[in-house]
Amino acid sequence: MGFLDLPFMLKAFQFRRLVVEDGRRRKKNKPSWLTPVSHGFYTVDRLSNIDNSSNDDSVFVQREQHSEELEIWFFGVSKAERGKEIVKYMQNHLFDKLPNELGIMRKCKETMRGAYVEEERTGGSAASVMVVNGEKLAMASIGGHRVVVCRDGEAHQIRDKNLKSSKHWSQFIFPVCNQEDLEDESDQRNSELVVITEKINTDTEFIIIGSSGIWEVMKNQEAINLIRHIEDPKEAAKCLAKEALNRISKSSISCVVIRFD
Image 1 (tube, helix red, strand yellow):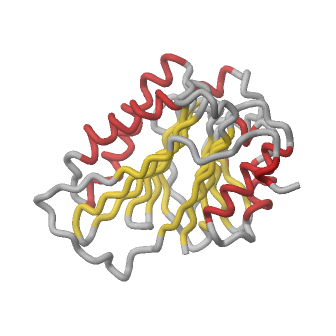
Image 2 (cartoon, one colour; image 1 turned 90 degrees about the vertical axis):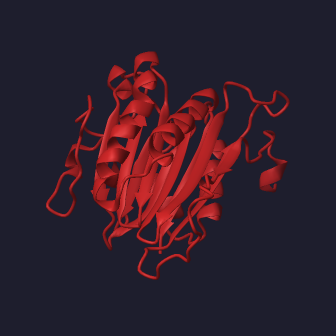
Image 3 (tube, helix red, strand yellow; image 1 turned 45 degrees about the vertical axis):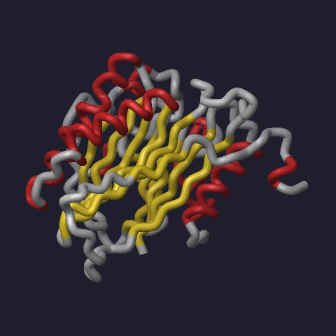
């Protein structure tokens, strides 16, 4: 039976590629030293007959090139309506006035924290990643949505207390869950906001941003093992979604895969 013959209708849902261009900026070629960033997404829409259902996820991607020296990617997965608010906040507080390269990571952390404050109060669920020049990451998560980084084939969730090491400069900057992997979404600690920054090193292979429908049926390392051999991030995201569906996930299924080549 083919994937599209499954009883659930699958489609890419509510994907928005948001590129904000400032007419005052000159378009420039991408510098050769920037680490290439590729990405793919996939969403399973269980309620395709009800457009814009609040039970579905939003997947959002935005790229900004502030100058020849500064490129920013913004990726996220969240509940549909909340996703719109996160994107709007980021556009109003970061992308409308990008700082210089030296201040960008601090601005990224502060802006992501601000974008997620309402999620923390309402017990919402969302996860997002910012990639600066293909060299640095700012990551945030709250609720059942999760960010998992693959380094040399090993899964590292941003809630993991082992993230701090001599090789990385991760920082927990707001109420954090400094615990082992949390598989139980009913655990109240899952509602705590985590914001982390770190470098992209040679061992950083790819990142998965996934909704609760992914993580309720597979562990972090399982997801990494499943798609590590798939070079095309679009195919990797589709493979993750298909596997979650095959495992009878009962929650919304959406994911973004970001690769560094």
